[in-house]
Image (cartoon, rainbow, N blue to C red):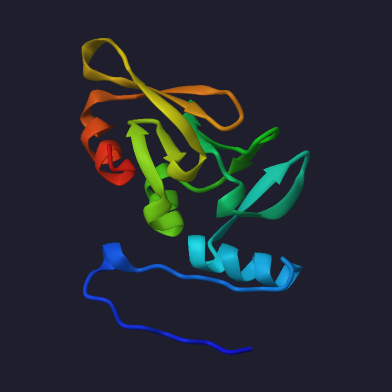
Length: 144
């Protein structure tokens, strides 16, 4: 496989292009690595612990001192706190309230709400409220 790396002048201009005959498991893995630095977190469901890829996470919420990780159809518990998950998951995730982090790649649309807040609709149809203190950062990351 031929690999070419070109130097760019800023982080905003970084990008990757993959030319492949077919999207195999190896290609999917490479895409996940590029998108999320291969980040994954341990989660618990029905007593079983498994590793969940960052690309599968829609949002993470803290309720009553417990942290829950939501995917398209499932909810898992994790031992990590929100600030630890922000560090692990990186730039693709954004704090949207004191108790919630959202995967910005899973946002379908945003809408202005009262009191300078935003409502975000996720790809799975769920709606989240973006607190006004975090609206500016979200707009910056989305390019709105």
